[in-house]
Length: 138
Image (cartoon, rainbow, N blue to C red; front, side, top):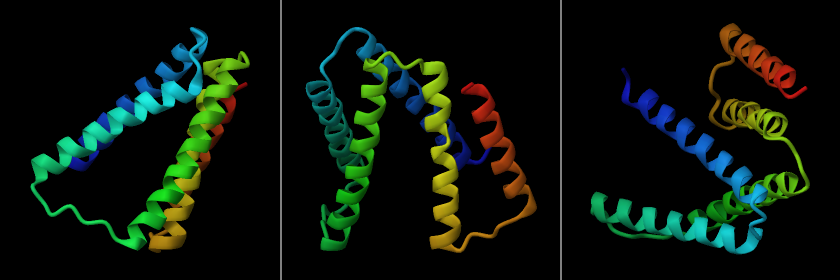
């Protein structure tokens, strides 16, 4: 199997557990700011370990900073939004599929910015995937 597919499957499982952990934390009455801070400490540790393993020069450019801040802001808003939805009693079986529609946003942006080809199979896949997610969230 292609290593990129294996890595995507690992990411899928990790993000699934991450999402469930957020629901579990909210169900247990965890206060979001310190929970988010601790999660991000783990991200920092993972980044430092990855850097140590890869043994590359640690460089930061202004272009990277701008993109990282934008991605971090979007991720933080989505994280806090989902956590708050769970705290307000939202059901994971409804909220997770809705959040799953983020794949549509990522695919559309990839097509627009990276000029990835729009094929009939991709359009069909997006339509079926989005339809399945909408049905699942009802």
